[in-house]
Image (tube, rainbow, N blue to C red; front, side, top):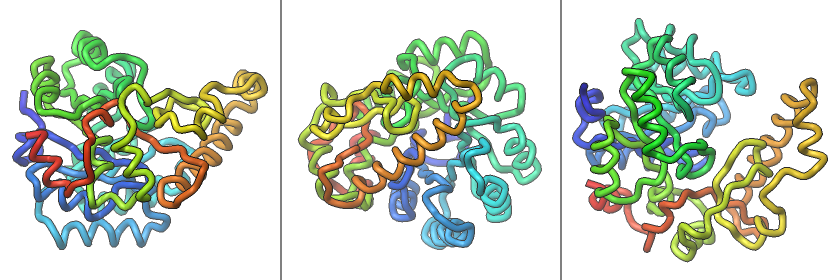
Length: 311
C-alpha cells in the first residue's frame, strides 16, 4: 500500500490539518513548501468568491498538492457551491466531515480529485470505503478541537480489522517518534494540527499563542458545552466557570428528537461564535481549542521550523 507521500507525490506523509477559523493561505503554502501538504476548511471563507480566490492564491505561490476540508451535511448551506468550486479549481484532495460523503466522492472521481473522509469508528470507515473514498482520516481521542472516542492504536486496529482502506491518523502527534510509531501501526500518514497553532503563520491572538506555551497536556479538557459535540479545549479559568458538561436543560432538549437537530445547530452557532471571538481578540472569554500535543509547544516559530522537528 502506498504511503501518503507516494499517494500525493510529496516528500513527507504529513497533512497540516485544516483548522476551523485558523488555517489560511500562508499556512498551506508553508506546509507545501516544507515537503508536506496543507489543507484549510472551505468555511474559513465567508463567500464562494473568497474561497475561489484563496485556492488561486495558493496555486500562484506553490505547485505542490494541497486540499480543502468540506462539511458535507445539511448544516453547511454553502456545500453545493463549495463542492462545485473545488472541482472547477481542481484541488488535489478534499477532506470530508460531518455527514455522508457519497455525493462528494461521486463528483470528484471524474475530476481525479482524491477524497479523504474523517471517521471516528470502523463502522463509518466501512461505509465510506464502500462509497469509494481514497482514504480515511481516523480522528482519535487526542485530536484538538472536535475529537473521536477511541485511542489512536485502538481506532487504527478497529478500522484495519474491518476495512482495507488506507488510514491517515489524526490526533496527538507532536514528534517524529510518534509519527514513526503510528506508521508502524499501519497508517499511511498523519494529520497534525495543534503544534502548528504555534506557527508564525497562524494569525491567532497573542494571548492564544502565549497560552499554547504556558499550558500543558494535563490542561486539556473535553467539553460538550460549545458545539454539542466533544471538543478539546484549554482549561482556562473561563472554561472552568462555564463547566464542561451539558446542563440539565440542555440534556433534556438533546433527548427530544424533534428539537435535537435545532438545539445542536444553535449550540454550535453560539459556541463557534465564542471560539471565533477568543481566537483573534483579547478577551476574558477564553475558549481556545487545542489537543494534548500542546505539550510539545515551547515557542512560536515559523511553520517550516516546526515541520523540521517532525521529519
